[in-house]
Image 1 (cartoon, helix red, strand yellow):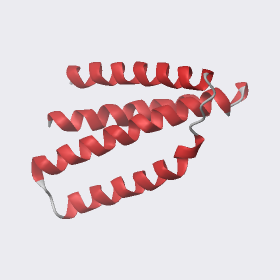
Image 2 (cartoon, rainbow, N blue to C red):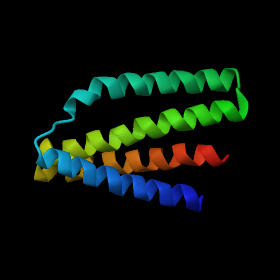
Image 3 (cartoon, one colour):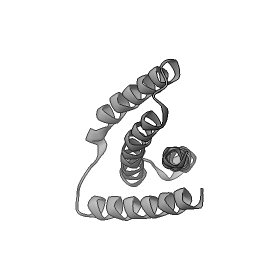
Length: 114
């Protein structure tokens, strides 16, 4: 659990620094939304298949890899939304979005150690 927590913290810090740097240089990550939504649906379908037909440890490792990449991309997207789109009064929505991304990333990285 400690290893997943440290890896999650390092990932979040690194991705946040990258997103602020990229936003400062003029990059915009809003194009990622359709890809992220579709990827989330694919991951959900994979989990439903995993429940019906368990693939064991290999299946959880595949889920962990896919979910880690997906939720890392969500952290970049939501941080970009925080920088560019959200106004000062929308801080609660932005905080909840980032909080859920971090929790989901942590849970995905925990699935590696199961």
